[in-house]
Every structure is written in C-alpha cells, then in structure tokens.
Image (cartoon, rainbow, N blue to C red; front, side, top):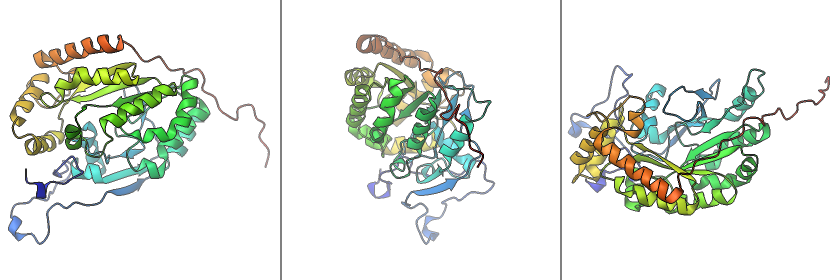
Amino acid sequence: MNPSEYFKGRGAQINPNNKFFSNQYVQEHIEGLDEEFLGAEKTQFIPTHPKSIISKSNSPDLRFERSINPYQGCEHGCIYCYARNSHEYWGFSAGLDFERKILVKHNAAQLLEHEFRKSSYQPDLIMLSGNTDCYQPIERKLGITRSLLELMLKYRNPVSIISKNVLMRRDFDILRELAALNLVSVAVTINSLREEVRQKMEPRTATASARLKLIEGLTGIGVPVMLMIAPIVPGINSDEISDLIRSGADAGAMTASYTIVRLNGQIGGIFKDWLYQNYPDRAEKVLHWIEACHGGKINDTDFGRRIKGDGNMAESLQHLFKLSVRKYMNNGVLPPLRRDLFRLPDAGMQLGLF
C-alpha cells in the first residue's frame, strides 16, 4: 500500500462505475491526465424530497418490517456496508460516492407525522437505520433523527434503533421516556475491539470503548440493548467473538446477534481492493474463507445463509457465538415492545371553526 495514494478517513479507495450507466470513466493513460482521476473531495449533503418515509420489507432475514432512513449514503465509510449498492439507484457510485455524497431527507418528520395521522395507520415497530446509520456525523447538525424520536414519543409508537455512533447520547432524554413506556430498544454495533481494525474497516466511527460506554449509558436509563457483531470477517475479526460478547455483557447488553460478511454487487470489488491494500499478507485466505461461508461465492442472495453463512467455517463461528452468549449473557433476549399505546395526541379535543 502506498500511503500517499490512500484516502485517509475513507473506507473505499475506488469509485466503481454505476451499473445503470451506459458510459463510464476509466483511467487508462494516467500520463495524459491534467488532474488526479480521483481526489479527496469533501463530503456533500444533497437535499431530497421523498413523498413517503416508511420503507416496508418482507425479508425473513429481518426482525422488522418497517424502517426509516433519514439519510442515504453514510459518512462512516464502513468498507463492508451492504447499503453501498443502493447508492447506485440514486445515480452515484457504491464506492467513494457512498461516503461523500449523502442524501438528506429534511422532511422526514413531517412525512412520519402525516403517516401517523392517517386513519388507516396500524401501529407497529419502526426501525431507525434499516439501511444507513441514522446517527452518522451530519445528524449532530441537522437533528432529523431526534425529530423522529420526538414523534415516536408523542404518538407512543414503538421504535428500535441500530447505530455505531455515540451521538445517540444527545437524545437520552427522549430515550429515557420511551424506555419507561417500553417503547424502545437499541442495537449497538461493534465488530472489533482492536482500534487498528476499526480505523481501517470503519474509518469514521466511534471507538469500541466509546460504544461500550454508550451501552452502559443506555442500560443506565432503562433502554434494553443488543450487541450487534456485524459483520464477522473470517481471518480479520472472527477471533474476537467471545471477547466482544463478554465486553458487551459487562457493559449491560442483554443479548447479541451477528452477521457474516457477504460481498454482493459492487461491494465485492470495493472490498477486495481494500483488503489487498490493508491486509496483503492474508487477503487470499480471507476471500477463500468468505467463499466457504457462502456456497463457494463471495456474494450470497439465499435467505438465511446470506446472513449467518453455511459450511464448516460458518458452523464453527456460530458454535462459538452461541457458547459465548450462553456463558456471558445467559441466553438473554430483548423484551417485546408495546404496540397498544399508540394515540393521537389531540384525540378528543374540540377543533375550532377558525
């Protein structure tokens, strides 16, 4: 790896062509270029104006059916992120574009309140961050996620959050009230306790120690927490499963879950480039181990197997995971959230004529 050519603070180091484009830019004759083919551009925030805000899924691999993503694209820059492929639908690349061209749904709260007030609305769990992190850095300035949580509390709708950013602490006041009503649970993602791994794999995220303190803080205000080990990459962080679960349990996490990395679509090429630059000594082995978990391929679309993997490697990881959860978390589970408290705040109030 040539340090002078590495984009610090970014996960992806390439910007592959969008598969929906009929034309593409290629770097064939570098000596003929007047400027760098790829530069260290600043992050751009692009406003969008969606007409609806709740996404619905019927995937058997997900524990939720409804989700809200106030942002598309993510500054965290996690190299493995499955959401990278969805950035192509917006006309961008799944590589560097995903990390530095962030689409912002400024009207998310208005759309959610409109949905809540429909006579046809049936209260159910809504996941924040089903695709990209709702607490990525720009949330500190825009506060869209906080406005969504305010509505969850106002209307008493159950909500679950998955994030790896300690900015969530800002909203402890709302989360405490939601927890008192049994309306919220949180999954905190940590996939390595080694700082050098985090810096390479998730360059703009909080440290593992900060996330463990986040779990402690959430537990302290009554929010049930799950530790999410995602993803496990054989040969890079697979040896940390037991330590991660022990650390999560010590911090107060009630249970844990995990996924095994899968490299669908453009993520395969992006991840391979990153892997050979950062771990050239073991890159081939890591790729072979990933293939061993997914039927001989690095990508996987089969329900179930795409999340947990299959084969001897996946079975050994699953066995270690289950033993660790039993030992350190006593096979705990998250409590079910209430769905019977939903209300219209102004129900029963007489409206004026003018």
